[in-house]
Length: 321
Figure 1 (cartoon, rainbow, N blue to C red):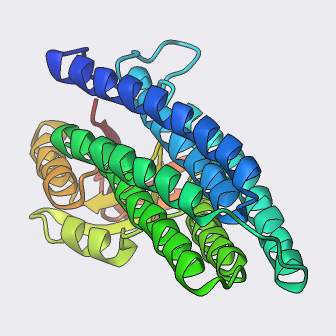
Figure 2: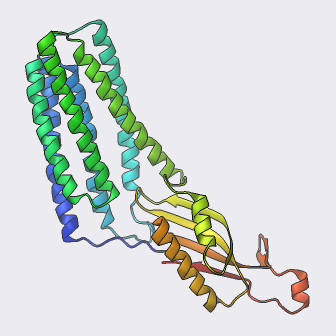
Figure 3: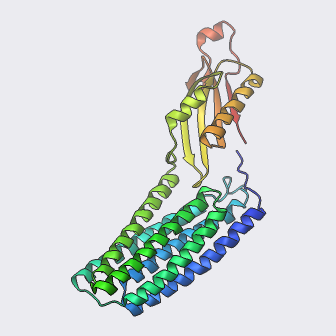
């Protein structure tokens, strides 16, 4: 089995340039919101700074993923480096959960002991955030051709909305003088960070534990494979993720007792079904012939068939590369 990395292209270079610009702009905004939050005594701005850290990490992961997609597999990493981004996502999401819990605890404390904030500074900094996040979302939309970049776009688009909520909170404090609005907004932003981070942790753990990929139905795959002419049965079926966008499959397929040259056509049809209908390109399919009895040593011909002289080669492995 081989994994072929996509060669670098003008499209990937443009994507990397967009991500570099987005990373620099987001990091600068994180610093601005953090300093402004301290000066304005605004927990909402501080939590928004933490939320933008999640944006920075999401963009960084996308950048790393684009880079690793161009790296080929080698003898020590036969599937390439597809899970490096998954490990980074797990670490980053776990850290963000800790940040969200801290923001929530601080918000609860401020509800009991209110702190006077500066709503005008909140609104100015948040307005800059809406402009920056909106611009980054627009840039990502122009290069979002795969799941990785579309998820980054959705992350930035969602953050644009949450930053707009900070502006609304600042306006509410300015008009009403109610400082409790700031910690309540912080709780909402913390909940958003927690919700997105827990989702990332669950997805990455499922990949690392080689669970069935989200949205993949084993029953549907089995039915699709068994609909191919010449296939009698599909069993010992396993599907797992190599990375966030790449799935692999291994299974045993029972066919009639036919020569290997004839079974090759069945293999081609099976891989076509898996690739076109289920987006699975990495497969290992082992053929077993009808009438074989499986033992630990392999496929053994029943005694009655041996007596009739029907014994022959009864196991033919098929692979796609």
